[in-house]
Amino acid sequence: MDIREKLELFVSRLEYVRKTGNDKYRARCPAHNSNSAKLDIKIGQNGDRIIMICRTRECSPIDIVASVGLTTHDLRPDDPHSHVRGFRRHRNWVPDDDEFIVRIGLDQPRDKFNKKDWEKFQDAVKRESRRLQCNALEFYKENTWSRKS
Image 1 (tube, rainbow, N blue to C red):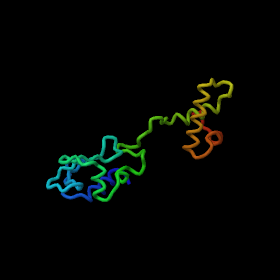
Image 2: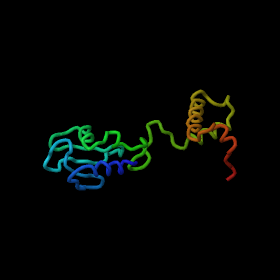
Image 3: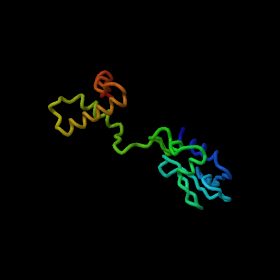
Image 4: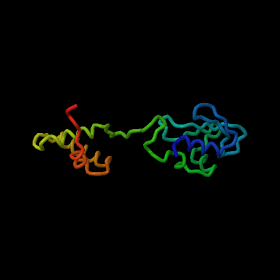
């Protein structure tokens, strides 16, 4: 389930819910017996969690979630790299350069690499092997690209 589906699941368990904006709701806080709808719920800025703020008694999110029979884990997306705005890249993510580095590195003799470039090549081979789920060196030796075009 993505984060919006999890938000809908959470909101469906609340009382006196009204939509106040795009992916934003206000409802009665289930953690205490409130007479008014003072619980604000929305998707976080990064799109990786649901944020809730009780405006009357400042109830903790753990108490609020537990009172409707869920856990805080139920309010996070199943895929930690998913994002409301698309794929969320981790800090050390390298774009499609890995394929390029491996392909170029295959054409170079080992003695032409300096130490830093050799380490970059080895790291790129590891990442590409994980991505392809096979040995990247063998894969790219068999699947060469055409330089004639």
